[in-house]
Length: 417
Ligand SMILES: Cc1cc2nc3c(=O)[nH]c(=O)nc-3n(C[C@H](O)[C@H](O)[C@H](O)COP(=O)(O)OP(=O)(O)OC[C@H]3O[C@@H](n4cnc5c(N)ncnc54)[C@H](O)[C@@H]3O)c2cc1C
View 1 (cartoon, helix red, strand yellow):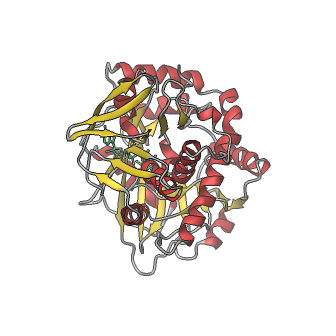
View 2 (cartoon, protein in one colour):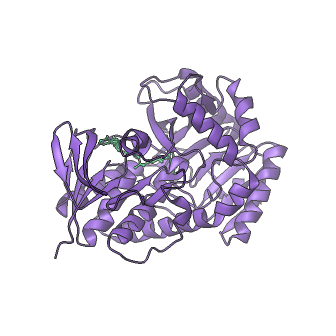
View 3 (cartoon, helix red, strand yellow):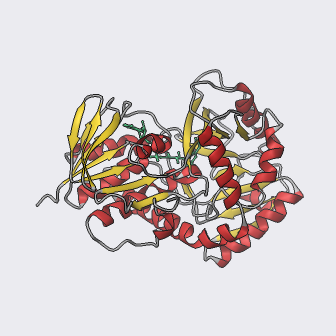
């Protein structure tokens, strides 16, 4: 027996994962997506599954580092100066949360949600409908400087205390893991708890699977507002008509505030633009593991026989421009770590997406107390792909009155009031 109708707004990894668990728990599911089903932040990202990311982005050191980067036009972090009130408000809040107490209060719930999600990816990959190149073979964190070495070793020790499978390695030990590339580093950390997948394949296969299970997609349909009755949304208003439902799940990625402001909910969030591109290496070059080039903040992921490079974080309102300096920053950093890779500035197919970044670095996950039938799964920031299945499963468990597997109370959508 069907449980009722759930309307999900947004067909990114958060929305599709939510639909996956809901349809399998017997709900009627409809997904409203303003674009077509082939591009959003969930398609072109670096594909890393990261229990290693157990510290929120708002952490000590980020402010001074961020200010230093602001004056370097090829740096991995940039805030486009503007009189945007949301951006200023976000900045003040970020500064308030970038402290040790905030970090230590949230490492365990973030670790648990990430580890749970990684396990859910394992289960998903067992289903014969899916083959998205999941490899849980670890991510290499590579560093070149003494200062980053100190920070990363401290972090690795904390990860070990938290029970994560992590090994501190010398440069030679790292090189021994990768015979097909010449690595030039001071040392590295191998997060064996991490993994990688092909996000494009994952997203396409999820869409096909959901369609085969009767999920209805309303593409190129933009949610504009709501018809509300008492404490409930009765229907959502779109540019193509209204859609009624019993439950409404908001998974709109970086566009969250457009939707929550109309519900008078306070969920601050800024889009963090990042770029990626594919590189076809020469046949003698082979990379086994995904890697993060730490000082440069560049992600390197073997994918589909090629290598995907990704990076930069430009905070500000979305725009369609590709800032060449930022992409050059990624390109120029590669041979500093991976000696025998000669990567030119990509001539075409530079992809960009907007990470949904809350100022405290924590996702928004759960039911809002302000409405009886609204839940939110958004704000995954730099780990939104990684957290997708855990966010989706948690929402479906809330709606089906089942036990939620990890403590998500700290991710409450009500935490800013
Ligand atoms: C360069 C780069 C590398 C990254 N690498 C990784 C990584 O390795 N690992 C990781 O975990 N994360 C990574 N991320 C982050 C990750 O990609 C995002 O956090 C994640 O994809 C966000 O998913 P989402 O479903 O919340 O949002 P999205 O994927 O953006 O989906 C939201 C959808 O909602 C739709 N929508 C919004 N508003 C409306 C509306 N009003 N009506 C209808 N539809 C609407 C949008 O069109 C969009 O399709 C990376 C990001 C970037 C930019």
